Amino acid sequence: MKLCPHRLVLGVCMLSALVACGQAPPPANEPMQPRLVRTMVVGGGQTGAWQEFPGKVEAAKVAVLAFRLSGELAELTALEGDEVKRNQQVARLDDRDQEIRLRARKAEYEQAFGDYQRGESLITTGGISRADFQRLEATASTAKSNLEGAQRDLDATRLRAPFDGFIAVRHVENFEEISALEPVYTLQDVSRLSVKVDVPESVMIRARRDQDIQVSAFFDAIPERRFAMELAEVATRASDGTNTFEVTFEFPNTRDFNILPGMSVTVRLETPRLLAASDTLFVPPQAVLADGQGPYAFVAVPDGDGRARVEQRRVTIGQLTGAGLEILAGLVTGDHLITAGMSKLQDGLVVRLEQGTPG
Image (cartoon, rainbow, N blue to C red):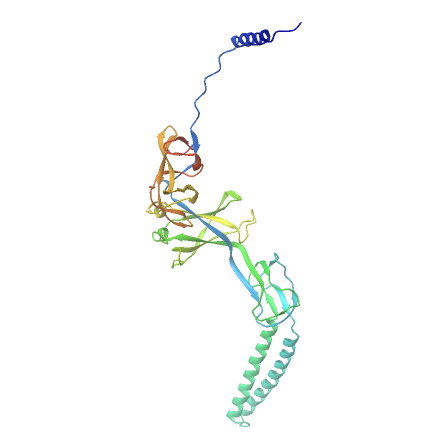
């Protein structure tokens, strides 16, 4: 017996209706939550202002080791990465010529000194004149200087480490003929490290040596760790073209991590008096966009209850420095600058602020 297609469709519809009668109606669509945005307070906030500067780690003590004599390398005892101690011999030149010269100078000195001693005993009895005795004295003094010079030349065929450290670079191969002052090794003391950063003039003009500035360094690979730093050196002349001043900080190395020269590091300067009082504002460069009308940024204006309204601000920018992008107009201290997801924002959009952001 064949079923009529119309009856089959009717039966399916009736079955669906019966099933629907036994179920509760679907819940109404809940309103979508506003987008969560990440912000930063322009100017650093009230509890303490800070700025960050990129830098490179360097060894606080570096020396290029070289012989002061020319000659053929006879021995290279240290390899790259080796730890060496102060006065440890790390290389040696072929010293046969210096040995021969030292023996000749020693014989000359012994003869000259003997003549001087004999003349000293004769001058009291009038056996020689005062002038002859002075010539013997001068000859003995010259022979002594030549002997000391020959000894120094022999000692100079040994290259020694001036301080404890690690061999960073080996510049030559053994048995090469090298020239005087040609680099053989680069020695670094990594027990203490230094970082040089470029500080803009707007910060330097307000800085004083007696200020309570807290300086710390951190690495992207270990963001949870901060290293306290000390001020070591400040350049008093701005670099050409950038109007920034080179400042050097130092910090002791740690055995917990393998921190080496050449690694990238971020240095944070924190002090309410120095940075909060500055009229110049710096923001992350990625927070500023641009269109046909020029640069702009998005600011979250808090409405309360953790929500905010997005406001597009036209900004006037200055130089890109180690402290960030300089803002000359368009933002003020205390603005909640949106720093991520700007491509999905528009003026007037309601958003949620991160927890901890003042509403």
